Image 1: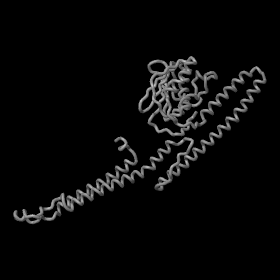
Image 2 (image 1 turned 30 degrees about the vertical axis):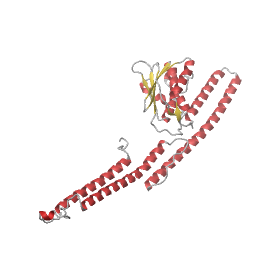
Image 3 (image 1 turned 120 degrees about the vertical axis):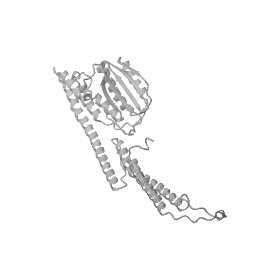
Image 4 (image 1 turned 90 degrees about the horizontal axis):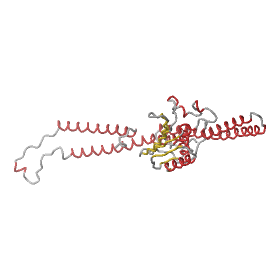
Length: 356
């Protein structure tokens, strides 16, 4: 019932057309009754009872028999046929919008989601403009990939030469220069990883097993990480999602000293709650920490463990899964709460272009 009466173009067109057809037929019936009541032919003269009882004698015609019944059946048949025609035409008019929404939802992957340029002039023009837009986006994506490959090669080579020459020089400042070079290489690698696309496809992932493996590795390294709750498998890009969730957990362990992970699984989606024991983040910076290269004042040093892209990468990966990542200060005690929501019912592209 909910889907039948959804607020869609098809339902609006069909409802409006059916209302017009229904009102016109009701008005026709009202006029018909009015005119029949005013111009009904006089009844036949009364015959003696004996004659009325003779075989073959007929009673006076009434409104439920004769021509009126045929007329009513004809009107109902017309109503049915007009309703069927209205349903078909409304469906055909609404289909291009549905195809456009589906193509737009699956756009951004490694393949171009093209629309068939058929139908009325407005529909063909919309499909043609959408296909042109998709071609331009795909072309820009390919140009960006080629540019990143060139930047990666052109910048790594001089950095390697600088490092070799510094090591050979043996100057007093060589150690500091090498540290700067290593930091530049780390920033370059992180930036390229953030901008580079992934061609990993969607597949069914046992996310609970993946989280258990991540936590086991961290516990072997002596990190305070715990997991509670269960989760059913869902559709995801395994390597990308693993990296995104790992970034959030490692961020909690690095700044909050520990991470308590809770899984809240529902038919609508999975929520991963990550609580640390740190000092939290100022309310004004809760959203800014997702900006690329943004770091809080107490983490702006070369030994802080990153260049400010970990949370940006994590949020982008989760967005590619049509999910969300948000941070909240713990109102009951100290610490920060990271909430990762991954929907189950969302239609995910087969070639999601996640950021890594």
